[in-house]
Length: 291
Image (cartoon, rainbow, N blue to C red; front, side, top):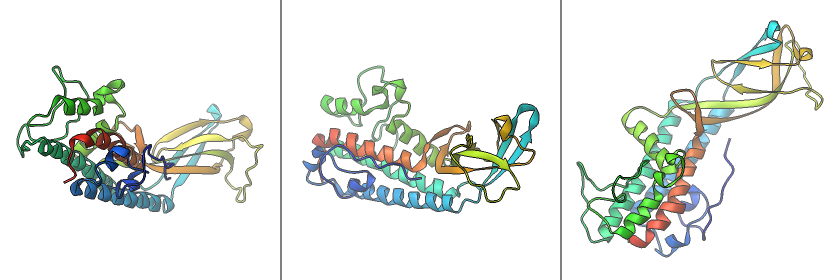
């Protein structure tokens, strides 16, 4: 349920960022401390991620899933259908709050870059001062922050963009942040769903105390709430009335409109936070002030 911890790559712990995964890069340490607005948002994002993790865990522990197993003799298979309450919408709302804090951190960084360069940020309207996130490379030059930064800073920003990676930025943390945050702010909550699966054995339904041994054939079954799943089995494992028993693992994931799973919810949040702490801040820290 909780993704394995991945320790970041650099330096000793920094207040706030340590709770979004591991340690702070040495370039951040040279700033002595982060600007208070960025530090505050990092701390808040960490708190929200911890809250989200606990909410997902509570949902999973109280999830009363039931599974129907229907025998299909002519196919030597079972049709498996699971019934489960979806995650409560508040989980999606808290995930949106995490994303909002990350987006704010990036825009605070953009504003800091402008002020440190001796310029005046542009507030509101077209061309306002914002952190650029681009999937496609500009037709001319490099990305920039209004009202315009040095080529050195723009080069650093350019290397952080989704288009600077293969596959047009698919799976890039900033591309994920931009898409998910825009959806949450302007269209609807990102949909959270249960993803559960396990290696099960099939047995007669009237067997109450079933002991599973290593000699039994197991079959991988996914929990797809409300959807039929056909599982072909060995003839010896086909019963007129059957049950599925075994070890299950579960997590809360993002669900795209087409039904495809796009990632473990807390894991997506952590991955974006790690990229900001490990990549964005260290590369731009030389051009920022800590005020």
